[in-house]
Image (cartoon, rainbow, N blue to C red; front, side):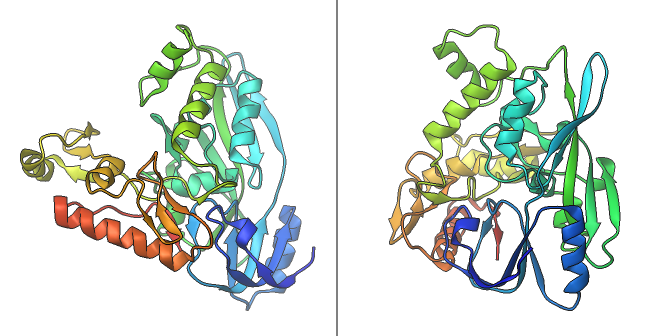
Length: 337
């Protein structure tokens, strides 16, 4: 376990932004994490997972602690369900594929989401009609201040749309070290109703899809719409889909009857941010080294050596234009640092 000074974070963020860490250390066990926190109590600390949900706009004047805890195992199982635990540093997509290969159901719709397992509860990540909270049981987390371990149940995580306790009242207080999921072994709830999954399956003449079929369909859709961060720097969806009160939405919808939306409760609707951005003419546009992907308006990309500030400026231009056109605020899903 070596603390490295003046460390480049370019390979540790999926946007591929060049930024320096004042100091950098990778930890591979809970004990190593505890030791680093104890020995650097007075120092500013920055916790780094897979680097997939952040935009670096400056150097990090702190000790960057990269959570690289590996391992996954079955904790318990019965005839119908299995409880599996993954360490925080496992690749999310690799973990999803591992569950599918064991015929454990529940995560297949979230295939190919970038990042590591430990950061998934922070955002309550989701895709194609499923979210982490649907299968989440608990997570273990270390208190940064005292190095004590705490278990958070699903209820204690206060999950919302791309929200959790870790983004709000417990922000910067804990480091998630492992996560437990409850998955199905039989009677899998195959969910193909959202997005293009059913048409992708139909294209391949699949009428009775398996978990693997759904996962393959999701991977194919994501690959057709989303750039690979290894080839074109990005952080997946940059913006959240705005949620509006129906009373407010109805007024906007009268002015823009073609606007797409989804009912999410008796009083609220969700509007696709990608549709708004596309209508505003941003899809595929380029501003120097930063831009908006040609196949998916929700994805901002680094075409070369864009700075984080350049990408941030593009995002602000989009937000301002959307508000001026539609009177709708769209929020960044990505953490801007």
